[in-house]
Image (cartoon, rainbow, N blue to C red; front, top):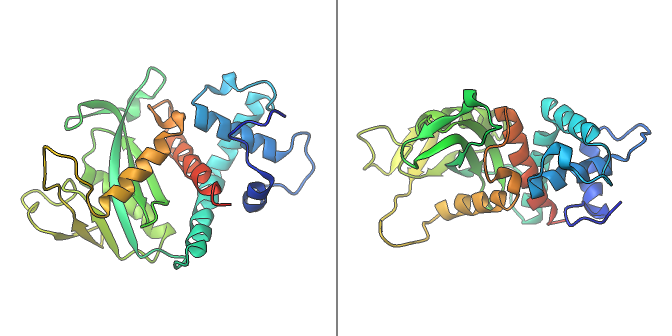
Length: 255
């Protein structure tokens, strides 16, 4: 097989292969299947446009869809977060999270059912709602219509967060999350979490905001994987899996 930049190395494969059903003998090595999936995530190509030296695109898509439905991709991503936190001498379970949402433009192939208009950003498409830890590692992602307000969309991502990461006690967020009429307060409760609002103080000049820059940097990392540049997926859970795989690619660089 061609040695593409996106291929996982042998040492990286040792880290993730335990999460995959790698026990039986197959015509194609699962490492080649993973390489094909990560090539698509990075380059943004269509499934049918995968280079011919990967296994057939139908087979690569079959495993992607299988691992998505069975939660394999999400579990692998969560396990990598824990391993990296331990490598950085931090507790396995984070106690602080940073939440934010990113509106992404729709395309002709994206589903109208999950597409909406974000009046603030003037974008028609979907919203990628994420929570990260203080290292910028992705903890949780939910994709929904861009027309859903940040506070309402936060309920979905935080309910998912509670099941996966039981140690979170505090969140940092921007001014889009407080209740109407309470934007001036610094501390709030959001889905049972203590939320500290970090506001922009200079509207006409760029300024790095404490804590919030971490989640903005994660969005930038995710967007280096071109499949995330626009909304190309028909189902929200597919878009979530692509985001999780983008996080996996980022984290594998530590191994």
